[in-house]
Image (cartoon, rainbow, N blue to C red; front, side):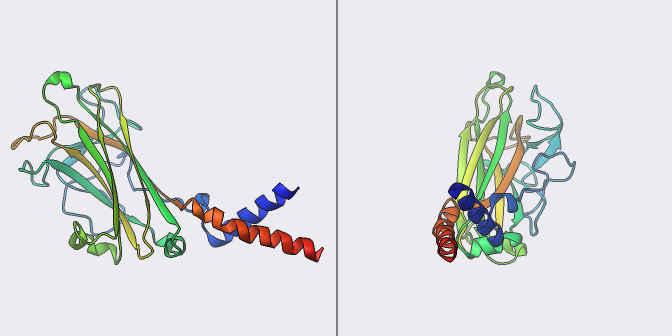
Length: 242
């Protein structure tokens, strides 16, 4: 009975604050790339769509089947206009976290993201192997992202992976971050990197893919722990009143 009462108080308190993970669901738009749309262009200045270096959404090809659904993203070049001397093909999406400002301003807004990556077999010759997933926190309006990119982030995290030589397997990148209290929006970045050979013309990535991009905002692990003393005090007061 004591454990039951404690659980009720904890859950009730968390729900009243809007901090339970189940009450704070968020995700990228078109994270599985099942919506056929343009992904190439300048940095996004609003939430809910992918933009970046030259890329396109494709179905199964090059002996690679999408991680989920029937479509996936294919990286093509390191610039939106085509090949360049840069080594990273990058796409960004702005995530609207305005519904979770209470948790963020309280210092317990934690976010996590994941993405799956795959590439053509190394049997085809020198094939780049590196991918990354990044997450960035910003203050201000989402329209300011293009001018803030590269210098204005409040915090950032990145996960880099090196894919294996099998076209049959997808590798997952994971990243987590506690949001600064001034955070107004979050940006997700997915990237393929020319770590083996820097092509300067044509399609710089010869079969490099991303799929299954997910994002979630949750209370930090300390959130429910902080509620524990409050819950215990509430139980004690009820006992004395009885």
